[in-house]
Length: 197
Image 1: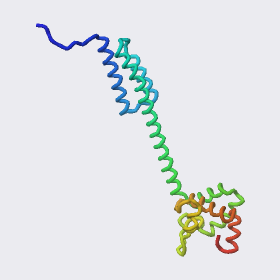
Image 2 (image 1 turned 180 degrees about the vertical axis):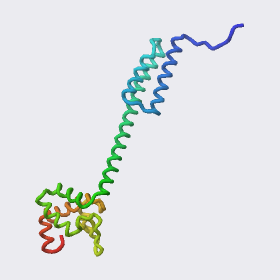
Image 3 (image 1 turned 180 degrees about the horizontal axis):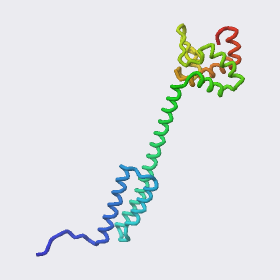
Image 4 (image 1 turned 90 degrees about the horizontal axis):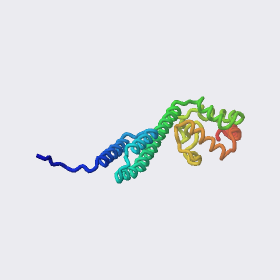
């Protein structure tokens, strides 16, 4: 008795179809588990090598290769962006932790780099009188706050938001001094005469 079954067509077509299906399946896996750029090139080369010269199926495989390459490059780009974002977040967290643990000596060193030795001598005297370089110094009789003892109204003119970050306080204080007095030594001279700056 003869067995009934489906016709399979030419063996070459069936083999090419299976190899293309397997290769495209590998691309699908790559979407879930992104390959490195080197792995993506290897996968594309493997697709090309598994396709035979049997007509229409080979043409379909050839058309699928650029799509696979484009997907692989997209995946590599997304992976690189995510890595860069994670590294930036880690750097920001490390900087925030460093700023949170900083103290008067750190703020002095930062300010000295900003203004130079000659002007820093005046600035050190000025801000030692104002706050002893304490970034949390709070004047109970006014809104003066931080190392430079800036008022709320003064903060708004520096372009820097009021903060407990001592480094940003130094930046804001120097902006204020530059706008109003031109230099720390001029501000110190005014403070010596009036008791404020």
